[in-house]
Image (cartoon, rainbow, N blue to C red; front, side, top):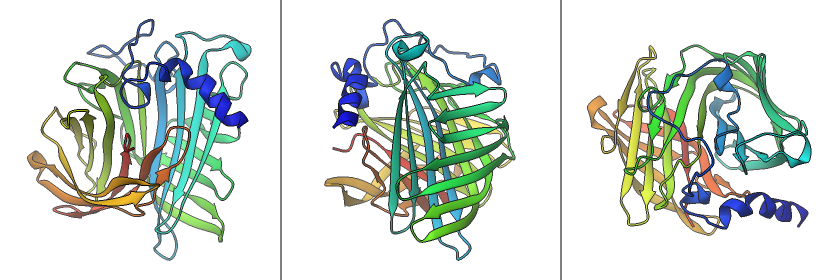
Length: 346
């Protein structure tokens, strides 16, 4: 009950005027907003941007155990500002929360942490890089070499990540448009991490290897008030090429799409609304609601016509902001693995 009350206090300023999924379509008055032609400053931009309302450091990993079992790992740190400033102590208006998960073909284990800024409980530093909340850490001498740790009641993980490719900028050089009305975010990724480490599960420790994808995004009003949720795909193909694509669903049944094709050498092609398509093929009853867990995905310009299937249809994040997030397999014109995130399914 205490945790629920604390969450209500944190989210009341947004939820009192909730528009778009999780209030992300509410007016951004008083906050900075993304503008076209961004000029990024690294490593500084790997850190926090407190004058923007919402920001995240979002990592997903497709992993394999010694016996060939597929696993998925999620580690996400969110920053949500009640005001565009920082202060020392409990009066700081920066709110931090984090989600962690391990998904297997049969189980989905999740945990959440919540913190207030200004007291050292959560934050991000850039040299050396460290993003943390309580004892959860994403840290390393640089953004290219990181360790990743988190734990919940039934799981933990300790992973090493090494990047073997460049940062990727989505949309127009990192300015990612989210609606026909022009809402946008700053959005870049590091989708080239190689991963090795250990999952600690109820049955014991499991050594794993695989690949990870880290998304960095910040904005103040990333959705239009008529957008109720999104379907986001990050797909890595056996060819070495990758695809990021998303649909933002409108209340009237229409959608807005965007995509980035990432060649194996790191060169990119960006696609505006309408070039990327995704249609549900099968639905699953998940946590009492119908959720699409098998999709037809197309990007005709690159010959992509694939079926994307959830490794575990029950990968529901039953947290303060509920959503579906889990690893997927890819079959069809291309084969591979990836991750799918779906929000706004009530």
